[in-house]
Amino acid sequence: MAPLNTKKTKREPGTTNASSIKIPLTRPYMNEAIKKKVCEVLESGYLTEGPVTKAFENALRDFVGCAHAIAVTSCTVGLELALRALNVGPGDEVIVPDYTYPATADAVAIVGATVVLVDVSRDSMLIDYDSLEQAITERTRAVIPVSLFGNPLDYDRLNEMKKKHGVYIIEDAACSIGASYKGVKVGNLADISVFSLHPRKFITTGEGGIITTNNPEWAEWMLSYKHFGLRAENTSRLGSSFQMVGTNYKLSDVLAAIGLVQMEVIDELLGRRREIAQKYISLLADIKAISLPKITNGGTHSYQSFCIFVEERDEIMHKMRASGIEVQIGTYSLHREPAFASGRGCEMSGSLSGSGFAYSHCLALPFYHQLGPKDLEKVVEQLKRALR
Ligand SMILES: Cc1ncc(COP(=O)(O)O)c(C=O)c1O
Image 1: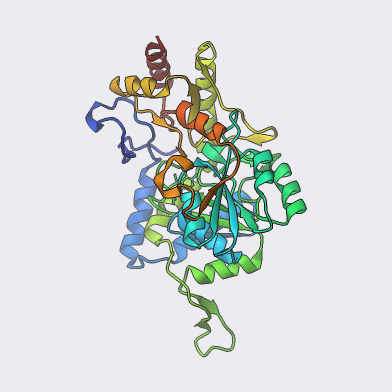
Image 2: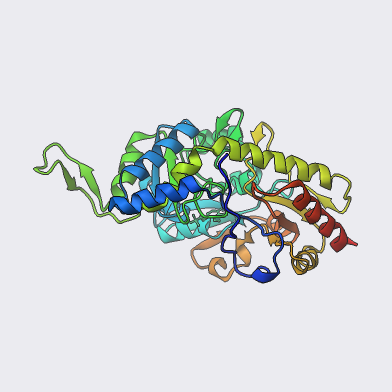
Protein backbone atom coordinates (compact mmCIF):
# COMPACT_ATOMS: atom_id res chain seq x y z
CA MET A 1 0.00 0.00 0.00
CA ALA A 2 1.25 3.51 -0.78
CA PRO A 3 2.55 5.74 2.07
CA LEU A 4 -0.03 7.43 4.20
CA ASN A 5 -0.68 11.04 4.96
CA THR A 6 -1.11 11.51 8.70
CA LYS A 7 -2.96 14.84 8.59
CA LYS A 8 -6.19 14.94 10.59
CA THR A 9 -9.60 15.16 8.97
CA LYS A 10 -12.19 17.76 9.92
CA ARG A 11 -14.09 16.54 12.97
CA GLU A 12 -17.80 16.50 13.64
CA PRO A 13 -19.22 19.20 15.94
CA GLY A 14 -19.13 18.65 19.68
CA THR A 15 -15.88 16.73 19.74
CA THR A 16 -12.60 17.26 21.55
CA ASN A 17 -10.51 20.41 21.14
CA ALA A 18 -8.22 19.79 18.12
CA SER A 19 -4.97 20.58 19.94
CA SER A 20 -5.64 18.07 22.73
CA ILE A 21 -6.42 15.08 20.47
CA LYS A 22 -3.87 12.30 20.66
CA ILE A 23 -5.91 9.70 18.84
CA PRO A 24 -8.60 11.07 16.49
CA LEU A 25 -11.88 9.33 15.72
CA THR A 26 -11.07 8.94 12.06
CA ARG A 27 -8.57 9.82 9.32
CA PRO A 28 -9.09 9.55 5.59
CA TYR A 29 -6.79 7.48 3.43
CA MET A 30 -4.53 9.83 1.47
CA ASN A 31 -1.34 9.20 -0.53
CA GLU A 32 0.84 10.66 -3.25
CA ALA A 33 -1.03 8.81 -6.01
CA ILE A 34 -4.27 10.53 -4.98
CA LYS A 35 -2.63 13.96 -4.96
CA LYS A 36 -1.09 13.26 -8.37
CA LYS A 37 -4.44 12.20 -9.84
CA VAL A 38 -6.19 15.29 -8.45
CA CYS A 39 -3.44 17.52 -9.91
CA GLU A 40 -3.81 15.79 -13.28
CA VAL A 41 -7.52 16.64 -13.27
CA LEU A 42 -6.82 20.24 -12.23
CA GLU A 43 -4.29 20.58 -15.03
CA SER A 44 -6.59 18.99 -17.60
CA GLY A 45 -8.87 22.02 -17.39
CA TYR A 46 -11.89 19.69 -17.23
CA LEU A 47 -13.22 20.13 -13.71
CA THR A 48 -16.88 19.19 -13.93
CA GLU A 49 -18.21 15.62 -14.11
CA GLY A 50 -16.48 13.75 -16.91
CA PRO A 51 -14.26 10.73 -17.61
CA VAL A 52 -12.78 10.44 -14.10
CA THR A 53 -16.21 10.32 -12.46
CA LYS A 54 -17.26 7.72 -15.05
CA ALA A 55 -14.16 5.63 -14.26
CA PHE A 56 -14.92 5.92 -10.53
CA GLU A 57 -18.53 4.82 -11.11
CA ASN A 58 -17.31 1.84 -13.15
CA ALA A 59 -14.76 0.84 -10.49
CA LEU A 60 -17.41 0.92 -7.77
CA ARG A 61 -19.93 -0.91 -9.98
CA ASP A 62 -17.42 -3.70 -10.70
CA PHE A 63 -16.42 -3.96 -7.04
CA VAL A 64 -20.06 -4.30 -5.93
CA GLY A 65 -20.92 -6.56 -8.88
CA CYS A 66 -24.11 -4.69 -9.78
CA ALA A 67 -25.27 -3.36 -13.15
CA HIS A 68 -25.30 0.42 -12.60
CA ALA A 69 -23.51 2.93 -10.37
CA ILE A 70 -24.32 6.64 -10.46
CA ALA A 71 -22.20 9.22 -8.66
CA VAL A 72 -23.92 12.16 -7.00
CA THR A 73 -22.92 14.97 -4.65
CA SER A 74 -23.94 13.19 -1.40
CA CYS A 75 -25.70 10.13 -0.05
CA THR A 76 -28.56 12.38 1.06
CA VAL A 77 -29.36 13.57 -2.47
CA GLY A 78 -28.79 9.99 -3.69
CA LEU A 79 -31.60 8.81 -1.40
CA GLU A 80 -33.79 11.65 -2.67
CA LEU A 81 -33.04 10.63 -6.27
CA ALA A 82 -33.89 6.99 -5.50
CA LEU A 83 -37.25 7.98 -4.02
CA ARG A 84 -38.00 10.20 -7.03
CA ALA A 85 -37.04 7.42 -9.45
CA LEU A 86 -39.61 5.18 -7.73
CA ASN A 87 -42.15 7.99 -7.93
CA VAL A 88 -42.51 8.26 -4.15
CA GLY A 89 -44.04 11.56 -3.06
CA PRO A 90 -46.91 13.27 -1.26
CA GLY A 91 -49.50 10.82 0.12
CA ASP A 92 -46.97 7.98 0.36
CA GLU A 93 -45.40 6.61 3.54
CA VAL A 94 -41.78 5.54 3.79
CA ILE A 95 -40.54 3.53 6.77
CA VAL A 96 -37.22 4.58 8.27
CA PRO A 97 -35.40 3.26 11.35
CA ASP A 98 -35.47 5.73 14.24
CA TYR A 99 -31.78 5.20 14.98
CA THR A 100 -29.90 6.69 12.02
CA TYR A 101 -28.36 9.88 10.74
CA PRO A 102 -31.13 12.46 9.98
CA ALA A 103 -30.31 12.30 6.24
CA THR A 104 -32.24 9.01 5.90
CA ALA A 105 -35.48 10.73 6.92
CA ASP A 106 -34.58 14.12 5.38
CA ALA A 107 -34.67 12.56 1.90
CA VAL A 108 -38.21 11.25 2.51
CA ALA A 109 -39.44 14.61 3.80
CA ILE A 110 -37.80 16.44 0.89
CA VAL A 111 -39.84 14.47 -1.68
CA GLY A 112 -42.99 15.25 0.33
CA ALA A 113 -43.72 11.73 1.60
CA THR A 114 -44.50 10.89 5.24
CA VAL A 115 -41.65 9.54 7.34
CA VAL A 116 -42.70 6.61 9.54
CA LEU A 117 -40.15 5.92 12.25
CA VAL A 118 -39.81 2.37 13.57
CA ASP A 119 -37.62 0.85 16.24
CA VAL A 120 -34.25 -0.83 15.87
CA SER A 121 -33.03 -4.00 17.51
CA ARG A 122 -31.33 -3.36 20.84
CA ASP A 123 -28.71 -5.98 19.95
CA SER A 124 -27.67 -4.81 16.48
CA MET A 125 -29.02 -1.23 16.18
CA LEU A 126 -30.42 -2.27 12.77
CA ILE A 127 -34.10 -1.90 11.85
CA ASP A 128 -36.32 -4.23 13.89
CA TYR A 129 -38.00 -6.43 11.28
CA ASP A 130 -41.16 -7.13 13.36
CA SER A 131 -41.68 -3.42 14.05
CA LEU A 132 -41.12 -2.73 10.37
CA GLU A 133 -43.75 -5.24 9.27
CA GLN A 134 -46.26 -3.93 11.81
CA ALA A 135 -45.83 -0.39 10.48
CA ILE A 136 -46.71 -1.29 6.87
CA THR A 137 -50.03 0.18 5.69
CA GLU A 138 -51.68 0.46 2.27
CA ARG A 139 -49.88 3.81 1.87
CA THR A 140 -46.39 2.35 2.42
CA ARG A 141 -44.41 2.60 -0.82
CA ALA A 142 -40.87 2.04 0.38
CA VAL A 143 -38.65 1.14 3.30
CA ILE A 144 -35.20 2.64 3.83
CA PRO A 145 -33.32 0.22 6.11
CA VAL A 146 -29.81 1.33 7.09
CA SER A 147 -26.79 -1.01 7.14
CA LEU A 148 -25.51 1.04 10.03
CA PHE A 149 -21.78 1.38 10.72
CA GLY A 150 -21.08 -1.29 8.06
CA ASN A 151 -23.24 -4.06 9.58
CA PRO A 152 -25.23 -5.60 6.69
CA LEU A 153 -28.98 -6.19 6.96
CA ASP A 154 -30.90 -9.47 6.89
CA TYR A 155 -31.80 -9.25 3.19
CA ASP A 156 -33.60 -12.63 3.24
CA ARG A 157 -36.01 -11.20 5.77
CA LEU A 158 -36.35 -7.93 3.87
CA ASN A 159 -37.04 -9.74 0.59
CA GLU A 160 -39.74 -11.90 2.20
CA MET A 161 -41.38 -8.73 3.43
CA LYS A 162 -41.02 -7.08 0.02
CA LYS A 163 -42.71 -10.06 -1.65
CA LYS A 164 -45.52 -10.13 0.89
CA HIS A 165 -46.28 -6.39 0.95
CA GLY A 166 -45.03 -5.14 -2.42
CA VAL A 167 -42.87 -2.31 -1.08
CA TYR A 168 -39.57 -1.06 -2.49
CA ILE A 169 -36.35 -1.43 -0.54
CA ILE A 170 -33.97 1.50 -0.82
CA GLU A 171 -30.94 0.75 1.29
CA ASP A 172 -29.21 3.59 3.09
CA ALA A 173 -25.79 2.02 2.67
CA ALA A 174 -24.00 5.25 3.63
CA CYS A 175 -21.62 3.34 5.91
CA SER A 176 -21.30 0.00 4.23
CA ILE A 177 -19.13 -0.07 1.12
CA GLY A 178 -17.47 -3.50 1.24
CA ALA A 179 -19.96 -5.19 3.59
CA SER A 180 -21.63 -8.34 2.30
CA TYR A 181 -24.40 -10.81 3.04
CA LYS A 182 -24.04 -14.51 2.20
CA GLY A 183 -21.23 -13.62 -0.20
CA VAL A 184 -23.09 -10.85 -2.06
CA LYS A 185 -21.87 -7.29 -1.62
CA VAL A 186 -24.02 -4.51 -0.21
CA GLY A 187 -25.11 -2.41 -3.16
CA ASN A 188 -26.34 -5.52 -4.95
CA LEU A 189 -28.97 -6.63 -2.45
CA ALA A 190 -31.73 -3.99 -2.44
CA ASP A 191 -33.79 -2.34 -5.20
CA ILE A 192 -31.58 0.73 -4.93
CA SER A 193 -28.66 1.32 -2.53
CA VAL A 194 -26.88 4.56 -1.76
CA PHE A 195 -23.35 4.91 -0.36
CA SER A 196 -21.86 8.02 1.21
CA LEU A 197 -18.40 9.29 0.31
CA HIS A 198 -18.11 11.65 3.28
CA PRO A 199 -14.58 11.63 4.83
CA ARG A 200 -15.66 9.47 7.77
CA LYS A 201 -16.33 6.69 5.26
CA PHE A 202 -13.21 4.86 4.19
CA ILE A 203 -13.72 5.50 0.47
CA THR A 204 -14.21 9.24 0.29
CA THR A 205 -14.34 12.05 -2.23
CA GLY A 206 -14.58 14.77 0.43
CA GLU A 207 -18.31 15.04 -0.17
CA GLY A 208 -20.18 12.69 -2.47
CA GLY A 209 -22.45 9.71 -2.81
CA ILE A 210 -22.98 6.81 -5.19
CA ILE A 211 -26.20 5.02 -6.10
CA THR A 212 -26.30 1.39 -7.24
CA THR A 213 -29.09 -0.61 -8.81
CA ASN A 214 -29.70 -3.47 -11.23
CA ASN A 215 -32.74 -1.81 -12.80
CA PRO A 216 -31.85 -0.12 -16.14
CA GLU A 217 -34.93 2.15 -16.27
CA TRP A 218 -34.37 3.57 -12.79
CA ALA A 219 -30.66 3.98 -13.54
CA GLU A 220 -31.38 5.87 -16.75
CA TRP A 221 -33.94 8.09 -15.02
CA MET A 222 -31.58 8.94 -12.14
CA LEU A 223 -28.69 9.63 -14.52
CA SER A 224 -30.86 11.99 -16.50
CA TYR A 225 -32.44 13.70 -13.46
CA LYS A 226 -29.09 14.47 -11.87
CA HIS A 227 -27.96 15.96 -15.21
CA PHE A 228 -30.71 18.61 -15.72
CA GLY A 229 -33.01 16.01 -17.30
CA LEU A 230 -30.67 15.44 -20.26
CA ARG A 231 -31.06 12.16 -22.16
CA ALA A 232 -29.52 10.61 -25.26
CA GLU A 233 -32.10 10.96 -28.02
CA ASN A 234 -31.79 9.61 -31.59
CA THR A 235 -34.38 11.97 -32.98
CA SER A 236 -32.70 15.06 -31.53
CA ARG A 237 -30.56 17.18 -33.83
CA LEU A 238 -27.85 17.29 -31.14
CA GLY A 239 -28.02 13.61 -30.14
CA SER A 240 -29.52 14.47 -26.77
CA SER A 241 -32.30 16.62 -25.38
CA PHE A 242 -33.77 17.78 -22.09
CA GLN A 243 -36.61 15.32 -21.73
CA MET A 244 -37.76 16.33 -18.27
CA VAL A 245 -37.14 18.88 -15.56
CA GLY A 246 -34.06 17.81 -13.64
CA THR A 247 -31.41 19.15 -11.37
CA ASN A 248 -27.64 19.17 -10.95
CA TYR A 249 -26.26 16.51 -8.58
CA LYS A 250 -23.16 15.75 -10.69
CA LEU A 251 -19.93 14.81 -8.91
CA SER A 252 -16.89 16.76 -10.12
CA ASP A 253 -13.93 14.88 -11.65
CA VAL A 254 -11.71 16.68 -9.09
CA LEU A 255 -13.48 14.87 -6.24
CA ALA A 256 -13.97 11.59 -8.09
CA ALA A 257 -10.18 11.42 -8.62
CA ILE A 258 -9.70 10.87 -4.87
CA GLY A 259 -12.19 7.99 -4.79
CA LEU A 260 -10.88 6.45 -8.01
CA VAL A 261 -7.36 6.01 -6.61
CA GLN A 262 -8.73 4.72 -3.29
CA MET A 263 -10.72 2.06 -5.20
CA GLU A 264 -7.39 0.57 -6.34
CA VAL A 265 -6.63 -0.42 -2.72
CA ILE A 266 -10.15 -1.04 -1.45
CA ASP A 267 -9.55 -4.72 -0.63
CA GLU A 268 -6.39 -3.89 1.33
CA LEU A 269 -8.19 -1.13 3.22
CA LEU A 270 -11.08 -3.45 4.05
CA GLY A 271 -8.71 -6.18 5.21
CA ARG A 272 -6.88 -3.70 7.42
CA ARG A 273 -10.17 -2.50 8.98
CA ARG A 274 -11.23 -6.05 9.75
CA GLU A 275 -7.83 -6.75 11.30
CA ILE A 276 -8.13 -3.70 13.57
CA ALA A 277 -11.68 -4.70 14.54
CA GLN A 278 -10.46 -8.19 15.54
CA LYS A 279 -7.69 -6.65 17.62
CA TYR A 280 -10.22 -4.39 19.40
CA ILE A 281 -12.49 -7.39 20.01
CA SER A 282 -9.69 -9.34 21.69
CA LEU A 283 -8.50 -6.35 23.76
CA LEU A 284 -12.05 -5.65 24.94
CA ALA A 285 -12.91 -9.27 25.69
CA ASP A 286 -12.19 -9.09 29.43
CA ILE A 287 -14.12 -5.85 30.08
CA LYS A 288 -17.40 -6.96 31.66
CA ALA A 289 -18.90 -3.46 31.65
CA ILE A 290 -19.16 -3.26 27.86
CA SER A 291 -20.83 -5.32 25.15
CA LEU A 292 -20.58 -5.37 21.37
CA PRO A 293 -23.38 -4.95 18.82
CA LYS A 294 -24.52 -8.17 17.16
CA ILE A 295 -23.42 -8.75 13.57
CA THR A 296 -26.16 -10.00 11.23
CA ASN A 297 -26.08 -13.80 10.72
CA GLY A 298 -24.58 -14.50 7.31
CA GLY A 299 -23.19 -10.96 7.14
CA THR A 300 -19.63 -9.64 6.86
CA HIS A 301 -19.12 -6.27 8.53
CA SER A 302 -17.13 -3.54 6.76
CA TYR A 303 -16.40 -1.61 9.98
CA GLN A 304 -16.93 1.95 8.92
CA SER A 305 -17.11 2.53 12.69
CA PHE A 306 -16.28 0.38 15.69
CA CYS A 307 -18.98 0.75 18.34
CA ILE A 308 -19.50 -0.61 21.84
CA PHE A 309 -22.40 -0.42 24.31
CA VAL A 310 -21.59 1.00 27.71
CA GLU A 311 -23.57 2.28 30.73
CA GLU A 312 -22.99 5.95 31.69
CA ARG A 313 -21.92 6.49 28.09
CA ASP A 314 -21.77 10.29 28.28
CA GLU A 315 -19.54 10.26 31.34
CA ILE A 316 -17.21 7.70 29.74
CA MET A 317 -17.18 9.73 26.52
CA HIS A 318 -16.21 12.95 28.32
CA LYS A 319 -13.47 11.23 30.33
CA MET A 320 -11.98 9.66 27.22
CA ARG A 321 -12.09 12.93 25.29
CA ALA A 322 -10.40 14.68 28.21
CA SER A 323 -7.57 12.15 27.92
CA GLY A 324 -7.12 12.94 24.21
CA ILE A 325 -9.01 9.97 22.78
CA GLU A 326 -11.63 11.22 20.36
CA VAL A 327 -14.75 9.13 20.82
CA GLN A 328 -18.25 9.93 19.60
CA ILE A 329 -21.87 8.88 20.04
CA GLY A 330 -23.01 6.31 17.45
CA THR A 331 -25.76 8.30 15.73
CA TYR A 332 -29.13 9.93 16.45
CA SER A 333 -32.52 8.84 17.73
CA LEU A 334 -34.64 10.80 15.28
CA HIS A 335 -37.84 11.06 17.33
CA ARG A 336 -35.85 13.11 19.87
CA GLU A 337 -34.85 15.68 17.26
CA PRO A 338 -37.20 18.67 16.81
CA ALA A 339 -37.09 18.27 13.01
CA PHE A 340 -38.88 14.93 13.26
CA ALA A 341 -41.27 15.62 16.12
CA SER A 342 -44.58 13.88 15.44
CA GLY A 343 -47.14 15.85 13.50
CA ARG A 344 -44.71 17.45 11.04
CA GLY A 345 -44.85 14.97 8.19
CA CYS A 346 -43.41 12.34 10.48
CA GLU A 347 -45.11 9.53 12.40
CA MET A 348 -43.80 7.10 14.99
CA SER A 349 -44.84 3.49 15.01
CA GLY A 350 -44.68 1.42 18.20
CA SER A 351 -42.11 1.66 20.96
CA LEU A 352 -38.76 3.20 20.04
CA SER A 353 -37.00 1.77 23.08
CA GLY A 354 -34.25 -0.01 21.12
CA SER A 355 -33.38 3.30 19.48
CA GLY A 356 -33.42 5.03 22.88
CA PHE A 357 -31.05 2.39 24.22
CA ALA A 358 -28.63 2.81 21.31
CA TYR A 359 -28.79 6.60 21.61
CA SER A 360 -27.74 6.51 25.26
CA HIS A 361 -25.36 3.52 25.22
CA CYS A 362 -23.51 3.42 21.90
CA LEU A 363 -19.95 4.75 21.85
CA ALA A 364 -17.82 4.88 18.68
CA LEU A 365 -14.11 4.31 19.32
CA PRO A 366 -11.30 5.71 17.13
CA PHE A 367 -11.22 3.69 13.95
CA TYR A 368 -9.10 4.16 10.82
CA HIS A 369 -6.68 1.98 8.95
CA GLN A 370 -3.51 3.74 10.26
CA LEU A 371 -4.27 2.78 13.90
CA GLY A 372 -1.39 0.71 15.21
CA PRO A 373 -1.36 -1.86 18.05
CA LYS A 374 -0.02 0.73 20.52
CA ASP A 375 -2.84 3.16 19.65
CA LEU A 376 -5.42 0.43 20.19
CA GLU A 377 -3.91 -0.48 23.54
CA LYS A 378 -3.97 3.19 24.54
CA VAL A 379 -7.67 3.51 23.62
CA VAL A 380 -8.60 0.39 25.57
CA GLU A 381 -6.47 1.42 28.54
CA GLN A 382 -8.22 4.81 28.69
CA LEU A 383 -11.59 3.11 28.39
CA LYS A 384 -10.73 0.87 31.35
CA ARG A 385 -9.62 3.92 33.37
CA ALA A 386 -12.82 5.78 32.51
CA LEU A 387 -14.85 2.78 33.67
CA ARG A 388 -13.14 2.64 37.10
C1 LIG B 1 -26.67 6.39 7.86
C2 LIG B 1 -26.35 7.65 7.11
N1 LIG B 1 -27.13 8.02 6.10
C3 LIG B 1 -26.86 9.13 5.38
C4 LIG B 1 -25.77 9.92 5.67
C5 LIG B 1 -25.52 11.17 4.87
O1 LIG B 1 -24.44 11.02 4.01
P1 LIG B 1 -23.92 12.27 3.14
O2 LIG B 1 -23.15 13.13 4.10
O3 LIG B 1 -23.05 11.66 2.10
O4 LIG B 1 -25.10 12.95 2.59
C6 LIG B 1 -24.92 9.57 6.70
C7 LIG B 1 -23.75 10.40 7.00
O5 LIG B 1 -22.96 10.15 7.86
C8 LIG B 1 -25.20 8.40 7.45
O6 LIG B 1 -24.41 8.01 8.45
